[in-house]
Length: 449
Image (cartoon, rainbow, N blue to C red; front, side):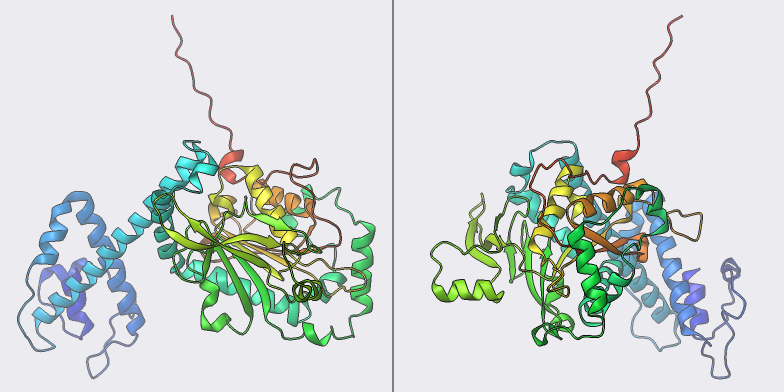
């Protein structure tokens, strides 16, 4: 089928009976006078599908056949219309698909093994966060995963939402619609209300809707903290004018990423000064221009040294991004603790400064909360509703939810006036994922007659 398809690619009509095995779509192989096809996109799509089918069949039926096919020497130099060039083209396409399939399988196995070991409590989090072998393999797999189109779409979504909220009047529009909620969350938001400082802040935003924010807040570089950023995707040139990035990860893969266990890093108070601070440093801290991090050096168990973040300053960031991070954590309470810590790093608005808000952006896999695949609403199940309740319990307010490619979930929250609840507070709520809410099926015991 592949050879017949490659022959028709150049307008030739193969004489073999095998050509009848290729099911043609209407107009797919209509040739022009010069013998070329009308739409090359159909050719590319058809060849891609057939290569995927060949690889799947060979791996299932005859695994060794792939190696024999790909190692066979190609035909010698031949004209462009010779069958040998078509055979070489088909062999290269199958090889590319086969290598892509193996790479995707290695990536999936490495990520799945790390997740499974954490969920089965084979090791404590304090041990897992410092184990170099598994962290290195997971970081390599995560970097490969980050190159996929749907993951890149999540990064672009974060940049768009940040620009819209801070520079295109998003913080004002949210004050005009403070009760905005997704329809699928309405049954869980019966007791949702406003604290007095939050109401005063929203009223101040509405009153200042025609007034521009201070000059230092107009078209500035936003301070972004990217948690779980093994290869620092926001360091790309297209984000350079928008973000001043602080990238954190358990095992950095590229230069510029700081080693940090976000669940254990020290958080300095917003109005405090680091130990040994000079008067100049103290004034910069009060003005909000001081560095939000304190650097140190981390030495792993295998002797690897890397720059690390010893502490982070509360209220120093405009945006915090958690992309494919929360589903990595093994428990619902650890996810809540990570969101609580992220909220403490964000700036908090007041009635006097209603524009001084922070934005928390969450992007995670579809396994967190499966959307409804049988309707057009893409309505998630109750797991995502519990995430909204838990986020608002730590001092955040819902802004937006979108379903991206591959049914990935993207959530945006803004900070509201008030302090961040302390760790272990009674008002903190768990953030479960879908598989944690599904009750295991009872095992039927055999009856003894």
